[in-house]
Image (cartoon, rainbow, N blue to C red; front, top):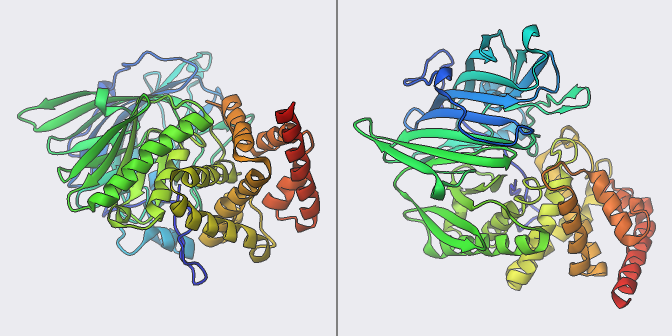
Length: 522
């Protein structure tokens, strides 16, 4: 994700992170048109090694409500229990979010929201789940513990909150990120039940397949992680509804935006991928074309630089909020003000979120414990793309990033880039370290090794970790191998702010550059 921080010392905007949003909500109110769990049918043939989410949902744009049911078919990693994240529930109680970092997310126009779960069954047997904030605990019946594949079904009603974030709405659209009950990750003997923090992107999920049936009023349209251009779309009368049946295959999440008739799409092909940039009537035509052009060309560039993009469609969607941009597989949310803005930063946001299709999407990472693994690589990729796309545009952005990155060791001597989210005290330090410092580390190395050599290392890392979860340690090993020497001093200086290792770091970079030259000459 990208969020901009404005400080008295900063003329430019700083790429940071995201959050979520809301509207008035009554947790005891039932949906107008609930969808029974029994109505959700398994409809997609898939690799049973991946979880499969099959959901049937009804969207009420006027009430800002989504009701429906989901079946999750998977192999349980624990024979006794399973956990789901209910991320929208962080916005149930404003009083619990009264800190400066949450205020930055919530904004002035705020309403609470949340998700209510009911009718939970495991292999058609009713169970008694427990909800604790954003975590849903589902016990597995003892009679089913010998079964390899399990189906958990649940009905839910989501009342969208309203604020400046990833899950919110305005008068013309609803944008739904991190909205669906999502299986928690189990690492070894540990369930990852990380709290929803205001900093960064506090989400960690693994690959899954999704099949969604999404009902909206006939006057509305959607863009999603799936490919609407090849989806089954049925309009029903007299209900006045439109039904979308969309699939997301081997993706880490499923997000979508519901838009009214003021929205239109600018469409082009980038290789085999259809790129659709969604804008609104009244937006600046030059800004629309510029953002769309960046989306198309950055997708082509990253496809060539970091490996093939496998999805048939990529949606760049204008939303409300004030979060810069937010990435999901096959779709990104872009702050609405950039569609009427001639500055460089909207273009940088689109390029950044597009790079996330590789670093987060195709190559997963743990954004809670080591956020730099995707954000630093993504912002380096943004600078790399911008420099070959528009040198004037690139110059101001790279200058801002590298300036903040170099200053970070003075500004934050007690912090690090390579640390978990909860250790960052505020958005500014998170931005300066995870985005600027980490990206500057790679940009400095690019100056010594050359763009081709550095990008080759990142391409190989992407190939080796595609459809898996990459780690900081694997990146360190990749650069050690490329240089023929242990990269730890370089990473310690830049990512752990161990300034006493600066000379060792410079020596390692120089030795690596020498090795790369010798290989090229040979």
